[in-house]
Image 1: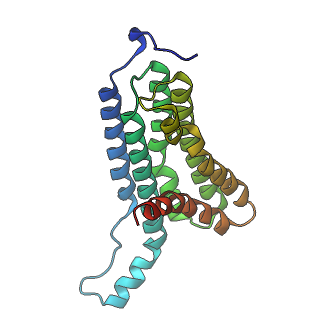
Image 2 (image 1 turned 180 degrees about the vertical axis):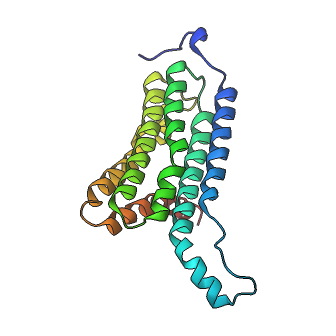
Image 3 (image 1 turned 90 degrees about the vertical axis):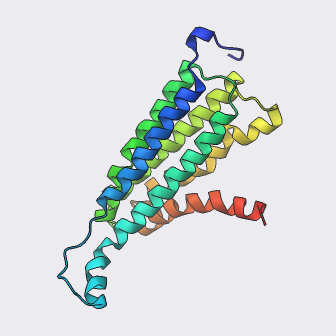
Length: 205
């Protein structure tokens, strides 16, 4: 139901944002902990270093992908809360659900880095990413339904739930494709940040 929520059910927007920023910072730090320096003899050649580093390539790729996605989540989260007039408890708990999925992300990231062509790690990564995106959809939908945005209705559409739909579709597709071809599923993970950055690049040209 639309309308102004009771003040007793509101939480400070600054406190929710500060808590969320702390979670984002910790998660982005945890992502790098799976990158370990390989054991290699002193004064080894470049070829020997290259050979020792080669097994780390999937870990680097999964780290960069997850870091970029968390960065995108953080930027979207910032602009979303910036345009809210109030934060009722329902929105707080939807935000906590979103942060839960973000906190879990280092695990499937490490899993995919260790076994980049196995079905289960890729499936787990896709499911976790889908949950994160559904949580954002829930945040946007709740704010739209309750009329919490400070901008006019037309501008609020940019912040609304429909912008989460492409990512939801792609992550659902990645889950199905993992049983067909793991590389197609991995390609879906790369497609999501591309869809985010390309419109922004075009917009500023």
